[in-house]
Each structure stands twice: as structure tokens, then as C-alpha cells.
Length: 301
Image (cartoon, rainbow, N blue to C red):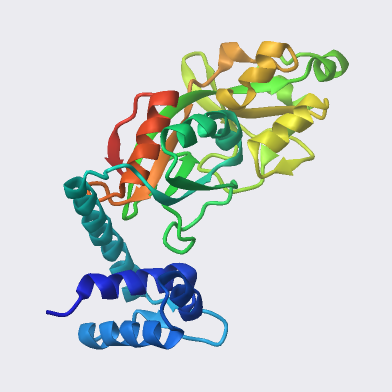
């Protein structure tokens, strides 16, 4: 019988590292041996999984689909071996991508505890507000805010946070505190520069939810950026409350127009490939984070 699991492992490693040479070094094989195994797999399947160039390897559409299933199968094999050998402890490199605000406020503070609990896991953590493709970026988990889009990913809800409009006491002292949404016409509203489902700011007025276009001379791509500028007295920002809460508690930021708060919430999800077949390290991190920030459930993304 041919070694299909071995072929999958070689292919997955080459796809992850985008290089036959790098895959060979990790697997202690020659680059030519890696290339031959991947070619043999492609010949058996009758499809091209990787496109070769002088610069790097690139997954084809069929390669991306096969990689997703191969990872699930390899994770199941790994889990089965650990169960029968008594070594079910999560281990290996875990690649996590989180939005900057959630990463700084909620993930970084609990990383030391996670690493103490799971010393055999190598946590590879990136913070960015750019929405990434998990397969393309070779990422196990993405922690993201906002509505879920249809995809092949699974999602686990980690937390919900109401949104709030905030400004610094110094800004309000200079420009006055808005009492009604229309007062924002005379204020500097700091806004996000990426496309959102609703670019205007929503409010609840006389029991109805309405949206208003707000003026401002600055756009940013992270909640942290806008809040830093709020702290410097540049203007007002509308963000998830968990972003601003530490500074609200310190009195450095003040919520405004709370009587008109639309009541909408920012939802944070952990996005990942698969569910039943996820690797132990992936499940351990998601379960750990869920216990620290909320009571989540599994849903399709």
C-alpha cells in the first residue's frame, strides 16, 4: 500500500513553506525527493496542486481544497497516535492572527498563562487589522470582530462588546459635549478607513434606529489608532467598548451620547478550518481563550 499520509505530510509542508528546499530541511529530505513525492501525488490525483516558479510555490484552487482536507486528516492521525501512546498534550507551532485591539486588550494578557499550561506549544502570534486568508497565510486561528461572511471556515464566538462614542475631557472642554446626534455636525469625528457594512454612525432616536453621516478630517485602520488620537484631543471615535474601557475607567476618555446609543454590538469570533478534526493545540487555545473572555459556541462562518 502506498504511503498516502506521508505524501500528504510532504505536500502540506511544501505548501506551508512555499518551497521544496525549505520543506526538505524541515523534513530532513532532499529538495528533489520532496518534489518527486509531490509530483507523484499530483500524478495519482490527476490534478496540479502546486504551481512552480523560480521564486516560490503557489497553491492552485485544487491544491487549496486538498490542503484543507489533508490538514484535517493529518491532525486526526496525530491525535489518534497521541491517544494510544498516552501523549495527548497539545504541542507544535500554533499560528494565531488577531486584530490589534482585541490582541492587545484580551490576548496578550493571557498568553503567559497559556504558555505555562501548554509548554510544548510554540505560539506564533501576529496582530493586524487586515483581514487575512487563513490558508494563504498558513494560519491556524484568526481572531476577528464583525459579522461573519459565508466561507468554508468554522467560527466560535468569544465575546460581545457594545459600541461607544468617546472623547477626551480636554477635547470636550474645548469644543463642548454633544447633547444630541445632530451636534456632531460641529465636531471632528474620527472614522475607519476600511469599508464597513454601515459607514455612518447609528443612533436610537424616539425608539427608532437612524444613521447619520458625521464629519471629520481623519481616518484610521485600527481602533487603537483612533483611541490614541482621542486621548490626544483630536476628536471623537466610535469603537467597541472593550477597546476604550481601560481609559474610561481612568477618566481619560468620556462616553458621550449614551442616551442615543443604538445598542449595536461588536462580536469577536475565533475563525479556523474544520471543527471535529482540529489539532489539539488549536482546540486548546480556542477553549482557553473562550474561558477567559466569554461563553462561546461553535457556528458555521
